Length: 247
Image 1: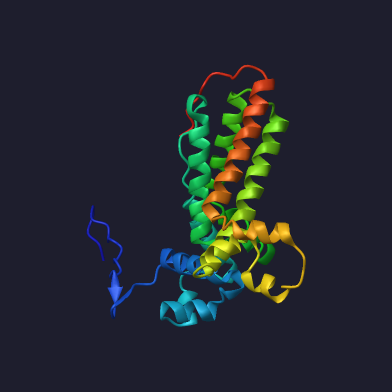
Image 2: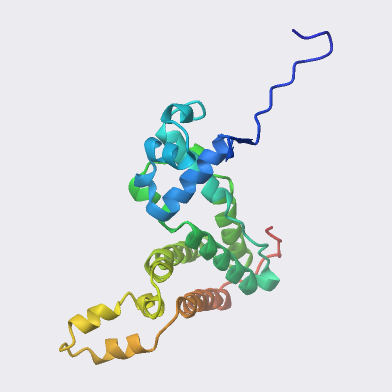
């Protein structure tokens, strides 16, 4: 019962219970994201998630309706972590390098989340506004540089595809490897493959393998070529428009 002018305050849950964090939607999303990041979304089942959190499956259903909601909580949490720098015409190269570097780090932290289009169907509820804002910032920068919308869309698509492929084919492989394989696998060419075909005459591939290109060197090259392509577009296009900071 309440007295006039005094509403009953909702009972606050304790931060921990029996030494474990109290179950919340945020905690469910975080653990699902971590699991998907390392093992992929097929590993995110209600039973597995309950085991990871130390609760019963029934307890999960007090916070989410079904597995689909868990998936969308995880993808929303993932896209919410996508932070982009300010992008301005006067420092566009520095800004884009920073943009790509931040996205690389996010992908590197949760690599197998990138496979979600193959594994799941995610609705609008699973997408944080950053997933829309950040690409718009890049396209806006390209517009301010005087690049027409179609060319800007192509450049943005190329950037996204290269970062996506790099995360899965280079960083992920290198991060899973140890020792010398960590560097050599950056070329998607494990030492064991060459050893198994020692009699095969592939001198140029062997020479490239021996260079020991690091993931960082490959990433820098990818970004350098993308920036060079943008510079070429700017040099043959119209004068850049008025600079607008995109923070």
